[in-house]
Image (cartoon, rainbow, N blue to C red; front, side):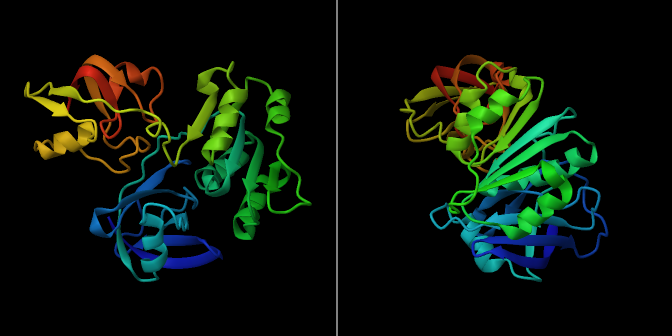
Length: 307
């Protein structure tokens, strides 16, 4: 879809809120809390951003974008170019971070608050929100105001750069809640790793994580292997410095992709044989039995995939 930037709000020095509207259609495709859209920027750049507006108001989509000065360039482009009236391609919403229909505890760090904002609103309206714990380096008054309106006393904010602010004691928090509770977490790797460690004995179905950056590939020493395409029988060599996705695209196979980090799931496909090395941050253990993400997944020796 081609959408127009209708509103642009400077939330903080490096945070902006953008609202998009279709120039002709009064209503945009429906979405559910936790969903994101892809923005197709210039030079083939595609970035995912969580929807933070009201799912019941389909007249517009809103996102919040933090400028990541040391990032891959997408957020800088958005900050510098998406002004009011600018047209941008936006995909239909997708949701791989579905909200629980049971009582839930939300934990967010920094810009990781964005996918949890619509969840907080929905859970509060359904009386299913136990608490929302939001950790941030500095105050983000606009975001906090929205969350306070939806969550009331269930919102707890921790500001690390404020010596007078209370600090989140994650071990004590996890010990204090029942394992029947759902935990939804998004934020820096350190925060999510700590939550994972503290909930090691929990039912995995009660734990939900949204990952912005995949660090799993950083420590993996890649080796070459072969990939066979089930539909054609063609076998291709995947060098150590290339992904399955790279090799398939070069060979003429059309595989949709977006993040290329094993986060968004756009390129997900099935495999029928082979020992796969899963380096994504998305697939659940049950899914990994027959599915992989060719942008980051690798294999020992060979793998047969269906694309």
